[in-house]
Image (cartoon, rainbow, N blue to C red; front, top):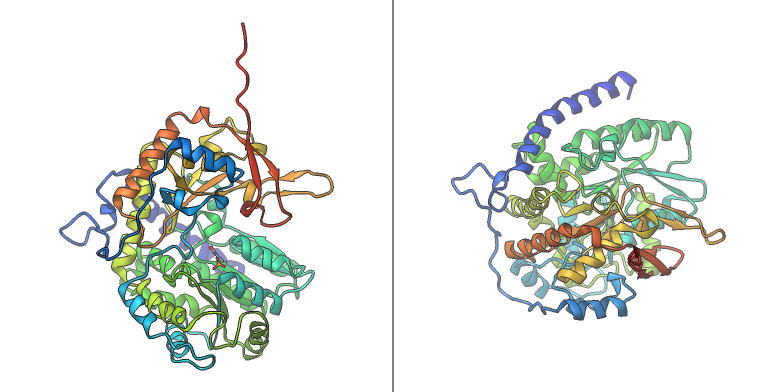
Amino acid sequence: MTTTRLWRTVTTARLWRTVTTARLWRDLTTTAPFGATLRGDTAMKTIIEPFRIKMVEPIRMTTVAEREEILAHAGYNLFRIPADTIVIDLLTDSGTGAMSAEQWAAMMRGDESYAGSTSWQRFESAVKDIFGFRHVIPTHQGRAAERILAATLCGPGDVVPNNTHFDTTRANIEATGATALDLPCRESADLAAVHPFKGDIDLEAVERVLEENSGKVPFVMITVTNNGGGGQPVSMANIRAAAEIAHRHGVRFYLDACRFAENAFFIQKRTPEYAETSLIDIAREMFSLADGCTMSAKKDGMANIGGFLCTNDAAVARHEEELLILTEGFPTYGGLAGRDLEAIAVGLYEALDPEYQQYRHASTGYLGKHLTAGSVPIVQPPGGHAIYIDAGAMLPHIPKEQYAGQALAIELFRHGGIRSVEIGSVMFGKRDPETGAETYAAHELLRLAIPRRVYTKSHVDYVVEAILEVYERREEVRGVEIVTQPEALRHFSSTFRPIAAPAPVCA
Ligand SMILES: Cc1ncc(COP(=O)(O)O)c(C=O)c1O
């Protein structure tokens, strides 16, 4: 792209951002019924869950005293606490959704033949129909797709730009000796600023990185939506421009497609020229711009397990299939049961159902709006799958080395039995094994991820109430220190200790 064309793309994007931003602010600041501001096209203001509940799972109501004991026993790491002691589990939206009657029915049809099963045929045909790539490689989950992709295309000295790498994407790329580079757009730096597409990649930075690292970039990637960047969406214009820049430099362009349907919904609602385009056609257009993708079907595959890797390149596909056979399985099942392939084949279409997406965004937006109304600082505007509390801003008395996000996660569990996850210096910070010196994340966030089709409005109301109560006495929340930690992905298994309250000063 010439500098003039790049400038024109950026300016047009800025213009319509101004218009949509005003509308977004209006939506955020009106306290209306569940998701009402998103609708506007029917007589009824309230958006209801577009499903009836057919099977229930009891929630065990634990007490604060019980939870204090559970926390101490788990080393204050919420990944280490038993799930049946949690009242509302917002740890992740990955693989935690409820499947539909259609998915369960399809599972009964699961063909468990080792090779060439009919379940594989249905899976492959659904993925090709929506994603449009020539080669589809099933994997047991997203990170297996990432590992195979990185092992095929990356090596020492390489550089892989992304809007923001998810932690497993980064780990898999860096395991090959390559560098995983985050290039989020400038608007994303201001957590409180409202912009319609804060998940965009910084196009000028992509151009620069490709010029400076000629021959060393195996692919450029964009993660839709940008999980590490607050669950923010990526615009079609940004995907198109990034693909164009990569291709001009002779570099492949990939999408991390985990939340492709949520991203398609954001594009439809926030881009005038896509207002009348169906979600499936928006998704098809997104993928038509890419050379391949990685996918965790535990998100917008609406399944509890599964993933896949796609490419248009036959030679790349052949190498990936060889690696697949080594660790995942034969290329027509890739570590999944036939019934899992069936659930995903149905789920991918359900994620593109406009009624479902309307409800999904309404419920996440409802949580975001009520926390905003209660002055809790969150990443604005609300993302598709999660609300991110700016724990650093909420708990300014906790210094970086005492991990405000982790401290808030612990307090939310103690107070209301709500499990969330720290996305800050515990997750992204690093300790030098030789000097012990720490590097810290840019922001100390706490993510409240909403499982798909699992919780109702009253569950969300309970979460709002608990967070507002903690917010009221936020000065009392104490920081934590790390007691033990592994070398990589430390958030999963580190143990912590709360910092003791300072002794009262005697007169
Ligand atoms: C953006 C993104 N990419 C990749 C992954 C990895 O997928 P999986 O957990 O299925 O391995 C995740 C999981 O949360 C994710 O959010």
